[in-house]
Image (cartoon, rainbow, N blue to C red; front, top):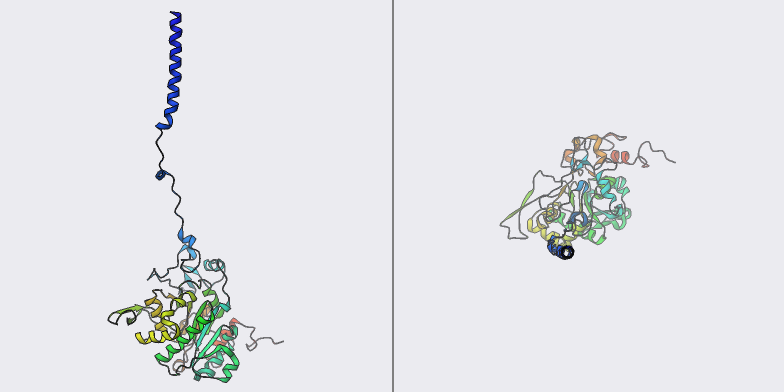
Length: 382
């Protein structure tokens, strides 16, 4: 009996070992298989954050927003003057110093220099003395190499003063659609030829506050599609579409009034080439039968589908300039003044010059911006 009990115990022990070995072999097979599809998936990368700044890419704007490109038709970023006169974007101040969002945005890329800007001044020979003399005395003196005068007649004195920066367009001196578009066509071609980053057009009755212009353009990138300016109307203009169709349909678009000035990035200007370069601007204008600034808006908004960014820091004689708050005058980008028909339409600002001495108020503005100027009253001469 004893031997029999020992045999049974050994058999049980061997059976237990065999069972344990079998379990060890079966455990991997009993575990659920992990298919490739069940593996943890990598996070989707933020394409907007990776886009960076470059041609064909969408840069991030201050506040995490994205600048609309051509595909985002209708998404217009509107700059406006707040109650205190500040120009704002996304609720943040642009022109009141400090480390604001736009300042950070500007520092995140190559800094813009004055030499990167092409400022085109449209004029006519009869205004060379009465208007251009004032501009050369004031703001042009701060941007001599960047300012190009587009006129319709040769002037020896003007040529001595500005050299090759005077361009005789040989266009008609008449204030007609054809003459205006002729000059704008030459302006466009000269800008493309210059290789500069920004094209800004102004009239001969505009004062350009150069630091404000530089700061504004620094918040954008010249390789992107950028069209900055101020409409003279509170609604889009409507015109017959004669470029993409036979004129049986109409098209609506915004345009920046040339009398207040406007700016276009090089990236956008290059895309305008089929309708603007080498005289094509004139033929495009003839098809839609609209003036130069309207034709610019048509090419950019209607043909290229790039929205105008409304900048209310540009000003023309068409608006009531006296309504501009006095404490914001020096923060604007361009100013203007009324002509013979409305001499009282000037910015309201006090300074060393009376209204009789300085009817345009340009000298007053200039001396407030640059008090060290030798002809400004109160300047100490050594």
